[in-house]
Image (cartoon, rainbow, N blue to C red; front, side, top):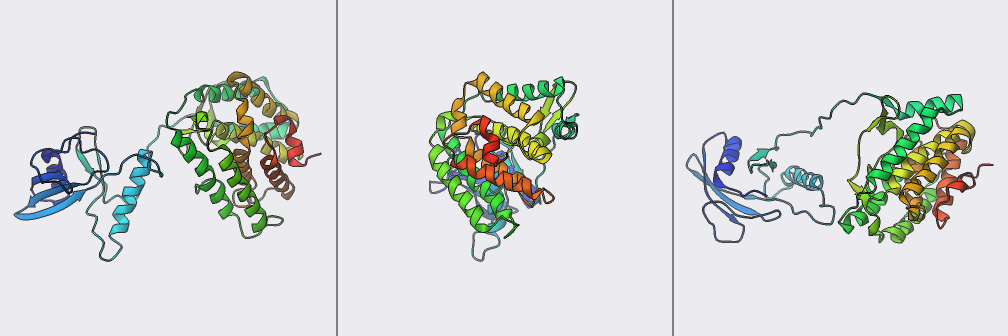
Length: 363
């Protein structure tokens, strides 16, 4: 973190005030006010700024947020908190006003974000066809080409490669397992998005699944040695193929680190989903892809422990695929089999790729 010096903070305050500003003193809050730069003030230490605007003496406190547990590990976490503070402080009577929210540039300059309405991301355009189009063709035609298996192998090898990179902060594994349940985009958020009742799907059924998932969290959250680099949303809509087996990925989600089971269950779960829609069971070309992917991944990584942690990740993906919100026209028979799969997998001690049809109640 660069030093906070008077020239740079003066330029920043002038951009807010629209008038010349002279910084009189800077000091960590609670200490004797000093002149000059505040050295090594770091994150999370509020700094008192005394300054002059057109002859008027003012004071403000510059606050930052420290990296750490409780959802503050990532820069984006801290940005979310400060953006919320800026809006919320000024909506509560008698609360100290937020004057601005901003950021530090690499050279220590300060950039105002206080007038921003929404943030955006500018991303390169990637040419290619979504992998979901391959799966739709396989559904329609019922057979696999050599290119289909080559592409599945390439995706498997990609995951095996990125999952070799180990994370160093055990707390991030605990967080990722916690968020698998509690994040708004994950199990509890998906459950809350279900309508009050949809056919056989009742609040009691959803509550039972949630309780089983909570038990799984306590079973696996201590396996912090499994922390690896992950994509986080590795499904066919986020994979674009170019020529042959060359591909790019999109929309990495929910953190850089997690359990490799997240990625493997996401893609293989979609093979199951496509097969259930096609024939009511895992068979034919999708069974080939499903079994080939699991066999190849386990052979390349040796990570058979994944089979003992996969259940809640499959539950998450199953709840998405069975959702009346995400897939309102899905055949109810397929929806039932997905719920049967979720419950059976959550009840099993370890996932067995050879028993998928049994988990689904498919004959």
